[in-house]
Length: 295
Image (cartoon, rainbow, N blue to C red; front, side, top):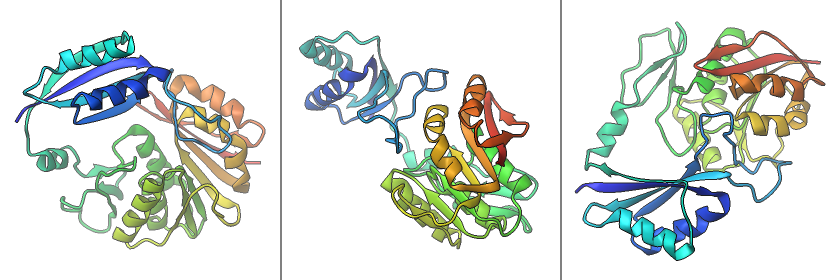
């Protein structure tokens, strides 16, 4: 069976009622995403500690899936009309029936971070020893090593992490950075995330890699200040969380920040300027990873 995907871009306050209206009219699923993702206007919605409540994306893209035997575009128009909405963009496309498992697997191949560090899905053969291999499959939590922000953090850990150092991964997602740190010789490793799914995924991924690490929610106790604090989030939450992230890093330790577009780097450095002396950044594909010494 073929499927149809309808995409609509609406204002923040319109997203929930329109999503409900689409589901009531037969949509099989409705996903929401930041319509400004990948631009300087992108906005992270993670309910970070200290961030205002009730946040949502100013421009939200809804993606509704329908069976191929209905008039999806007419349904979308009807749902909008019922609410008196005029979406900023509306389009429909076919989604053909496929072997989704095989298709997904084909999109994730081993990722070479460096001569020694690799991220390898479980259905792929690992490179020969003595490579350091992180076994990781795509899942609910963000971070498989393919995105430039994750790769930059992995590169930093591979190049600069000293054996035995304690590491705090703030916004751990899939746990990939915490797992990499442990495999690269870190001592105590802790991951923090606001999403319970991320905590669960991180624990499962750590177990699959035979790695000992603690994963907690923000109200948990991460222990003493870490030698290295890495946060691969996005520029806006990084600015909000600057005092908290720096408080978790010991004086003389390293703060590593990623998820930052090149035009956003200066503002992020300013937010951390009271605590961190920054080194030259790492960069890839328009993204940067900032690192520096905690004063």
